[in-house]
Length: 85
Image 1 (cartoon, rainbow, N blue to C red):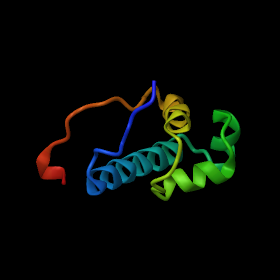
Image 2: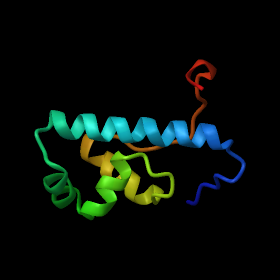
Image 3: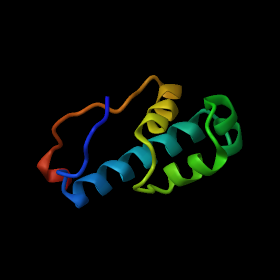
């Protein structure tokens, strides 16, 4: 399934990517993994892991979910709290 993001306001998309980036980095560190170790264990490239943790806005959603699966999570559509924006 492809999710179209063209109708999502840019600030909302940036907020979501930054929140995911922070989550992945925090959980990776809690797990005691370097970026290199995380990349190997998740089957992702090191460059992707670095881009993801920096909140790059153009990462592939399937790869984001691959990273999140390491922590039993996935991205799903949902409403955001307006106060977070």
